[in-house]
Image (cartoon, rainbow over the protein chains, first blue to last red):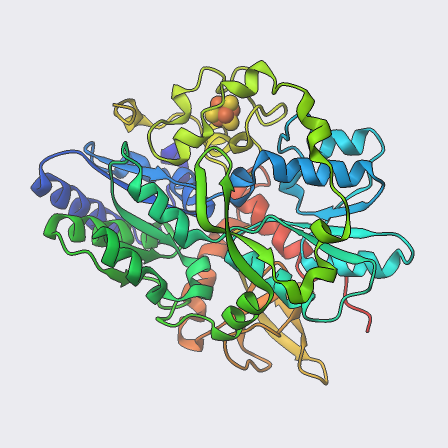
Length: 375
Length: 98
Ligand code: SF4
């Protein structure tokens, strides 16, 4: 699988980078695990067959980098309950099959719920304008890159029948959680280029101060990722915890200040659960009081408890997405992977989204070096 | 939804908020209200769910575009390409009637 999709623009450079990576890992002389936090990085790693080029002792884990996958079950339940109350729900297509406690939004749609797929918060606002007299709730998911767009429509005087159910998540705090997990063997992070476009790379400095782990900001080209890993492993080897920005085309030290100002004007960080991971202090973004009138949680009574009388299904209990995103396990450790759990009938959220580890691994097949991941 | 998509501004409306952006021949409306620095017609911008978030320095534009050009040669069943096509098809649609 890897061979046919290896399409480096500069195969010589790719080879040289792979050799440098091997050399650094060899000099470290023991297994090394690093984590990236971005679905697009995992897509590129799988698509371009990069894992087959990694040294045996290097494990590159996909952390909680898929916003759909970390949207928690009760958050899906809120969307389902609102849909059942007759409210129009606008959301990203990836959200439809994400399991809630008993139902997904797709299930709600099958029983008459009015669910609309949008690509942009601006489309959700348009939908509200086209449905005067009906309530339209934008079920907003995604990390800071997406949250800034939600913030932009919120400050832009949307129509009265529009509101937002925010399940937005903020990446920097979850890196702390992963770094602090007792089982964690992560020794460095590859930060997501486009989220860092917003936050700037300086956002990682306090993290490095606290955890003494290096962070490298990388782009999405196969060569960007390889170069980012070479840098990261070298920092691990030398014991130099610092941030290195390998994606200057898009990421600056300060980031996009206009977008940050808008983000924090609209949202405040609150603690909340990320599906399968943990409670993440400051990891969830909720609307500030100034925008209470646009906050679906304050506009509607959302009684999710009525869904909770059902026990979660037996299969869902076996989903190990959380351990996979924490880097402790990989999809092959899940008994349901490619059996009961496939993209058409996903048991866990990681099999739903195009950015979920299980879906990506399902589509791109096995990866040669993974037998040793789950030591 | 994490991968931004670069495109070239071909028009900006009178109040400077809405741009028409060309993505490999597909034209979409993209909002400029949260871009990091002012952009002009001819600039490449990185777009995310219908909003430009970064003016790509002109000297880096070609390098930024190449990944996407590789992806767009793929068939439709590649997830990365599928996500990219969806972003291109959907970004900023429908145009905002003000
Ligand atoms: S294969 Fe399915 S059930 Fe298993 S961890 Fe992945 S998403 Fe969860």
